[in-house]
Image (cartoon, rainbow, N blue to C red):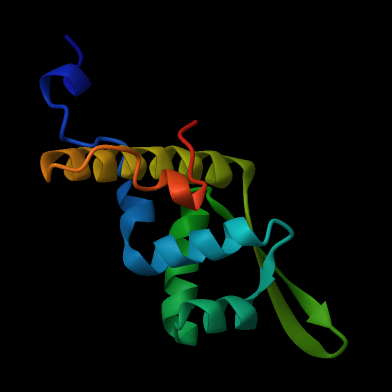
Length: 124
């Protein structure tokens, strides 16, 4: 018997690196922009300060989920952030676990059906 069978509500796939609110927002923003986003745009989209954004990007970069490229545009420093292939795969796996969690919670509350299906989130 696997751990999933013996503990179906443990939701092992809820990755702690991704699950933090700010990092969840960052990854969602980067999923919506596959070519990447400038640091300033990501900061604005997620409502973070420079320091908070830098710290969370560091955690995601260390985990191999995000690639951060620093350079110059004209004479001004320019930082671009992009989801890696690993980051994309892990984020989609994470979403599948979240979808299962929501489905389980809805079922426990007496409502059947895939609540996230209307949003276009599909398990992989």
